[in-house]
Structures are given as C-alpha cells and as structure tokens.
Amino acid sequence: MTSRSSQVTARPSSEARAVARTQTLIKGQNGIGTVRKTTLPGGLRIVTETLPSVRSATFGIWAHVGSRDETPALNGATHYLEHLLFKGTRRRSALDISAAIDAVGGEMNAFTAKEYTCYYARVLDTDLPLAIDVVCDMLTGSLILEQDVDVERGAILEEIAMTEDDPGDCVHDLFAHTMFGNNALGRPVLGTVDTVNALTADRIRRFYRKHYDPTHLVVACAGNIDHTKVVRQVRAAFEKAGALRTPDAQPIAPRDGSRTIRTSGKVELLGRKTEQAHVVLGMPGIARTDDRRWAMGVLNTALGGGMSSRLFQEVREKRGLAYSVYSYTSGFADCGLFGVYAGCRPSQVHDVLKICRDELDHVAADGLTDDEIARAIGQLQGSTVLGLEDTGALMNRIGKSELCWGEQMSVDDMLNRIAAVTPDDVRAVARDILGQRPSLSVIGPLKDKQAARLHDAVA
Image (tube, rainbow, N blue to C red; front, side, top):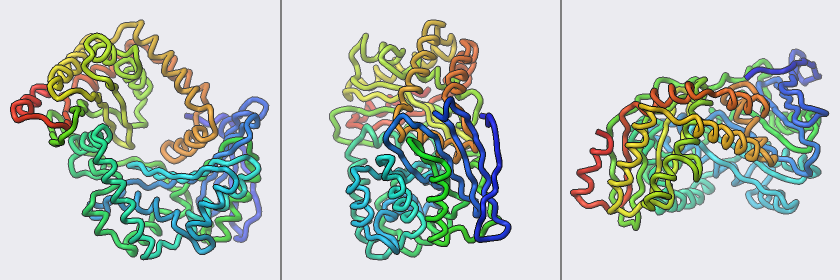
C-alpha cells in the first residue's frame, strides 16, 4: 500500500507552531476517486474520497479502540460507550442528536469491533455540514451521565439476550472463545450480563477520556464532498470543543498487537434446545497485514464463498444436509481465524462435520484446481468492486485503511493484487492454514453419545 503522490501545505492555527499537513494519497481521474489526507495539529487525521457523481456523503469517525483493549472487568465497555455517545452532549440532548439527522432524511449509526469502533452519518451532500457538526459533537462532548448509564444498561442487556437467542450468531462468539480462551480476543464484544451490570459511569468516563483522544481518531468522509471544506468544518468542531489542545501530538501508529495464544484440537459444546445444530470448524488464520491475505481471500472464496464453492456444493447441493454453509476469515493485528460454519439437523451434525473436515484435508493436501482458483479470483474481484458502490462503503474502506494500515490502496491496485494470486500461492496458504489441527464449536441439542463423538472431527 503506497501513496501515489504527496503535497504538504501549511495552514494557520491558534498555536504558532501548529501546522496541518495535507497529502494526496490516491490521485483519481478528473478528480473522481481522489483520496486526500490532512493531519491536524493535535494528531487528528482526516481522510476523504471524492465522488462527484453522487448526491450523498457519508461522514464517519473511527476510534482506535475495541473490545481487545478491555480488561476482563471492563469487558463490554467499548460497546457500552458506543451507546452512550448517542445519549447527549453539552450542546445536544439524545433527542436533538437523532432529530437533527432524521429531519434531513439521513441515517446515523455506529458499530464496535474487537479492534476499532466507528460512528457515522449518511446524508445528502448539502447536509454534510450538519452531519459533521453532530458526529464531532458526539465524539468530543459526550456527558456520560449516571442516569444515562443506568437506562442504557437495560438496552444493552436486551441486546445480549437477543444475540444469545440467535445461535447462528452466538456460535461465532463461542468459536472465538474456543480459539482464544480468556484472552481479550476470545471475549464477546458486547460483554456479559455480569460485566455489563458491574460497569459504572465513572469507569466508562475514564475509558472514554483514555481512548477518544484526537491522536486515536480517524475522520473519514466520502461522496460529493470537498476535502478542504471538510477539513475546515471538522477542525472548527474539534477546536470549539477544545479537543486539539496539544498541537505537537502525533497520531498513534496502527496496532501491531501482541502474540495471542491460540488453541488447536479443542471442542466446546453449548447445549441449547434448538431445531438446528450450529457448528464452526476452524483453525488459526493470518493477520490482516500478512502478504498472504490475498491468496487467503481466494482460498476462502473457492472453499465456501458462494454457491459454486466446494463446501456449498458438497454439503448442500449434493447431499442437502444444510441450508446455510460457508467459510470465512477474520484478520487481526497479529493473528487471524479461518472458520467453516454450517447449520443442520442435530442428527446430521457428524455427517456435516466429516464432509467439511474431509474437504479441508483434501484441499490442504492437494490444493484447488486451476479452474476453481480462476473462478474465485473473478468472484473476489467482482464482489470487491460491487461492495464499494455506495458512499458508506467508501468511507469504511478509507477510514479502516488509515486506522489499521496507515496507508491507502486504490481499487485498481486491490484488483491487481487479487489478479496476481497464482495457483501455487493458494496451494501454499492452503497447506499452511488448512493443514493445522482444527478446533470446533457447537450449539445445539446434542445427546450425550453425539457430544462424545464431536472430538472425532478434530482428531
């Protein structure tokens, strides 16, 4: 990921030594797709992508904090804080925040992951100044009042209950625990009933002050926008809040993580009275910065990324053993996961697991065919482009790239990296990843004899 061109400009600031640095990271054609970055005094980064052909804009702020940054006692604090930033600031009540965006037909939301959090609003291009003011106000001026903490606790406990009522979702949290144990990556993003009940307003405020410093934030905006205007409006909002008080502060570097302990050959079963058994069979994957991630993406697509994939054809089309079956990858700063999910009748769980394990072993030993690899490359290229057809997706791409990699890659460069993957690359990563002993997570109403046989799938 390399910058195509760069320019540096100085702008006046309230501090004599404060200089804003602006770079053109990707130079688009006729201004379309141009990605620019400005770093303000105080360490706040602002990244934009211009798309003049649309009438919308998406504005987001990414925070360099996720559930991975929590201690066991703080599990769920990042997600709790995400909720609380919508509850009111010194300038706006919770109703004022939602009404401002609703009144212009926009949409506003946020999401918390294991290594970052994002708050965003999508509006008409003419309403972008409003979206900037509202979201910046939320990030810099949240009150985190004790009564709001108490009220929102109930909503979060309901969200936890809703997740636990969906075993197809819950099994992925179980698999993370199976692989990472009590490490931060193995704990649920939402927290647990006990940890959420134990969190206090004071602890959440301290967490907020520590992790929402401008040096930990990336502003991302995409659509029919003007970079200079966005920078001016963001800077005004942060300066009004007094959030750029340390002009010499520098942005923190992308997370490098620490070596996370992962397991192999472990089985976890959560007994539930469900109609289906939900299973994830998987093993350690690769970090998001690993150069093999392009080959891993092709491998994942060919194995379980679509209707023509190996697993879909073998499990569903040929045998009808499952309605939903797919594979997926998760990449973190220093490690990753590869998993195969299937939902099936409890009586069929061992047949499904045997087929999945046999396919993984077969691909690890013999690789994929050239036709499968070529088809996966085409599918991955197409889905990459189609997935970037709206301003929200563009905002996500440039914001996450700046936060997680510190660099930007054009769509053409991404397509070229996918196209450059060779059959040998895919076979090599298949040997490395799929050749490992898997672990298994299961949620369902399995009887004792069925449960005892689960270890056969990871033997």
